[in-house]
Amino acid sequence: MISRWLYHCILSLLFPFWILYWSVFHWKNNIPFKGLLARCGWIKNKPQQAIWIHAASIGELRLSQHIVASLEEKGPIIISTMTGRGFENQLKQPHFYFPFDHPLCIKLALRCLKPKAIIFIETELWPNLIHYSTCPCFLVNGRLSKKSFENYKHIQPLSQQMIQQLSGIFCVSQTIKERFETLGGNVLGVHPNLKYLAFKPNLPDPIPLSNHTLVCGCTHPKEDLQLIELLPQLQANIPNFQMVIIPRHQSRARWLQKRFSHLNGLIIEDRYGVTLDWYKKARWVFIGGSLIPHGGQNPLEPLSCHRPTMIGPHYFNFTSVVEGLRSNQLITCISHPEEIIDFCKAQMIPINTYQYFKTQHENAYTALLDLAQRV
Image 1 (cartoon, one colour):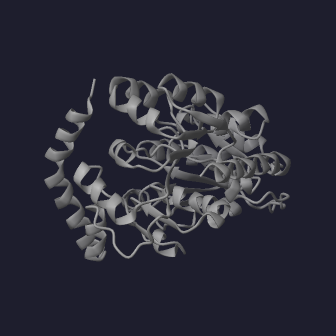
Image 2 (cartoon, helix red, strand yellow; image 1 turned 60 degrees about the vertical axis):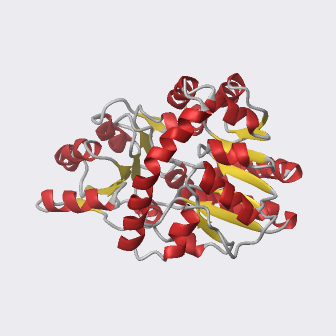
């Protein structure tokens, strides 16, 4: 049981180390000092009385642009993020680094910004920002895995109070709706994952018969080794077969390149932002983070290209998306890496995801219109 008082004590103890970490991070990445001030709550030259959208990751930043499009008539919009990879610099809206959730930092940020409303995306909720804000707070594209749900129950009453203080929650499945309601949340609706909005429905394009490329996207340590072990068997069964490994982290890519530089037919990608390009070139796709208990990654990118796609047994971070795709026979779930060999031998033509993506896209857009009416 964690109370707000204990949470504040933990934050106060961590604060000096937090300052040191981000100081080094900003110095190493040549990020201006004002970014560190923003993390402390000193956020200047941003419009007041704006709608504040918090998008922690690059994927959420991209998703935020669809939310922005539905709220533009409501007034100015500002965006906060955790990422330091530079994608935030491509945003048209005023943006800043999210402040540390310590009461002093949060109170200072709220005095600087005086937001009209705050919108959180997916799983990124912060107790003190929700507690000290005097404006409505919403969670959109809300996800709450079984593991996170159990963790939330272990830190009551802090988590329950945080959920109950939200003005409204839009979540991505009936199961998640029930979890939020168990914690006392005010669920306003269930909608398809808003990430469908990032993919305009299109008809499949033909794959050249000579293309025998398996792209393994967003792989994690140990998992990538299991996949590379399959390469000789795949090459023995499929002519001109090649495997592309795209690790989740660049440092892992460099390590794999050194270790497996002697293997023919293996490409280790070490660049950011090229995963979708590789999916378009693939005949088959495997979604990483799913052979190990990480929770999987987003499978919508390769499926938007109509590529036959596999995912391992651990996809709990994307349960609603994967189960919807499985029920429409648009994705294959495997239990063991060896099943990839049979899949590649059997699935030689593109799949057609047009109608399913079109329906999900329309329903997700309707959910954004509902949000716009409530903000």
